[in-house]
Amino acid sequence: MSDNLIKRENIKQVFLEIKPYFKDNLGLYTHQRISGDWHFHGLGFVNGDMTYVFGINIGFFKVSEKKHYSHVGMNILVRTNGVNRELRLKYRDFFRENLSNWITDDEMIYTSDRGGIGSEFPRYKELSEFKDEKEVITFLKKCIDDTKFIYSKIIENPENIFDGVLRAAPPWHETLLLLANEKTEVLNKK
Image (cartoon, rainbow, N blue to C red; front, side, top):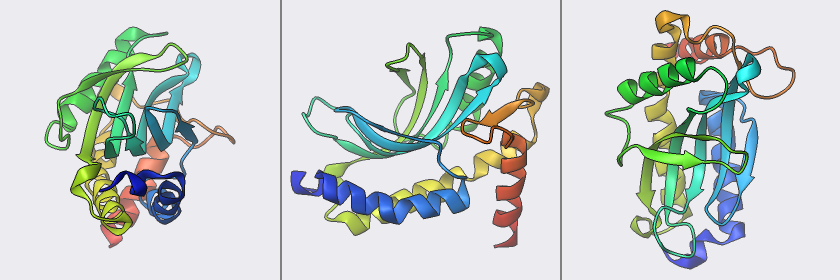
């Protein structure tokens, strides 16, 4: 894909197509982040005074030394520092185990501008592998489809680690377990 296809208007067009699909299959996104290293929409989760614990993100990412975004796809970020590190490590281990066949690259370390440190589980492709926006959209839809399985694993709620996990946006009452059940039921009806 040429650098022309990662211009703002192309990225906007991709998100216009992909956000409704993301919402229907995984849930209403909670945030958007834009920097020189990424432009993504994410579905974040919190747990009480732990604040952000993990999120599912879709978009454009700078993974190489290029000056522009180099990859497109999804990731699941798990914050491992902060309050209740023991539970945070259980989240990391859960995703590490269940995403081992889903990720396309090795697990990476992520850092945030708010001091978060954790694990990044990537499912990316290089932008150079795509010839146009339509191919990017098709790939992102497949990423979403291939991610839905994680909700059935979350419903199993090993050691009750997902009790109290909420979607990180108002009205602050949508639990992850409720969302996972709802999206899994929809998936099973298809």
